[in-house]
Figure (tube, rainbow, N blue to C red):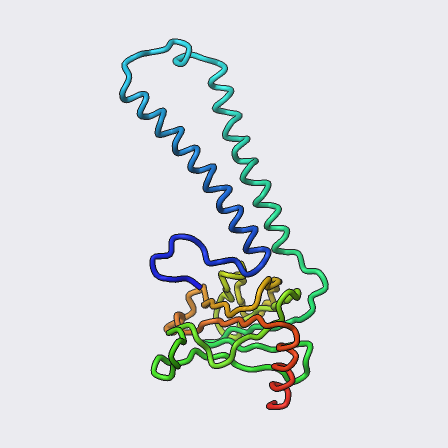
Length: 230
């Protein structure tokens, strides 16, 4: 999860997020090279009094500064389009979960089970246990198996919400009357925190998302206990 004074992204917990981090570094390096080149040209023009007639009127330079930006845009656009298609790829999900946004909590329904559904509320500050995070912990976590394709159907009951977990590279709007879907695979066990990323009213900042990825055996034990309690 994020920590104070953090400059970069959170550690990736899914293959899609790893691709997003690589694309971010790729684009940032291109921006850095362009910035250095422009700064060098500005400093050279300011500090020197020499004038080159070939630079003032040169057909070759005009061709270069027309083609070069187009090449740079292609170098940025192609990896970006590849990741966009990867993010929309949904193949044979092992588990489907419906996440419904409310003011101001989330409810989860495991559609592969008949009676496995629950509401997820933020734990108030005064009820937190030592080691738990303020404004991020919930009374019920969304538990999923690791290294399994998970499909999440996202919608809302009242106003616009957004189901967002940065470490998984997932951000999907929850729109009343509309069912959006997203998919991800967790590459390692862990607890991943997120928050509603669409302003949805007075308590918008108090409806966190907690995804707990566990090995398949532990997930089966958890689901069995939840079904017994239901």
